[in-house]
Length: 163
Image 1 (spheres, rainbow, N blue to C red):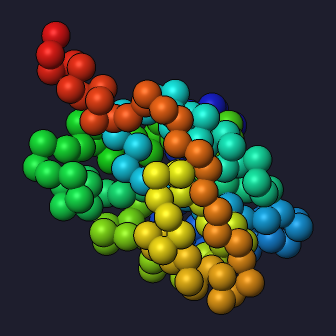
Image 2: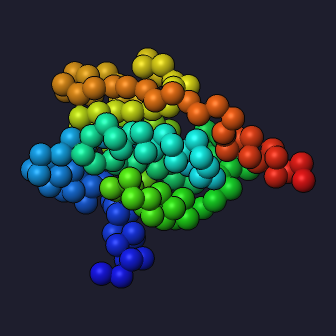
């Protein structure tokens, strides 16, 4: 299979993501889920995603649509279009699947796939993590990964604008 097609095949609809998660579970793999805007990929994102992937057998990334990012971050965001952001994430070897969500939180997507492990960055507390209660009630684990200091999309945008 052509490599670009292999990457594009990792960008799934919610229905196809559910089928993939069921197949992965049938192989005995634990499903790890995280989410975010991932507007401009940087080292902080890459370290975070690699650490998240190491927690289980398959890493699923819920990706905010452009409309969702605008509601959360303002009208000047995202910098990169959702299809570009999805392709970048799907290109990473540590990411098994990417799925868009248009709501402000991935709660519906989390309830659909029922991840074994729900992960967010260390700048979140468990009470701030959408879907945490559902995952715990379903027997899953909720955890955070330490924030990589010095890396943020907002800082990158500020730096670029100051040039």
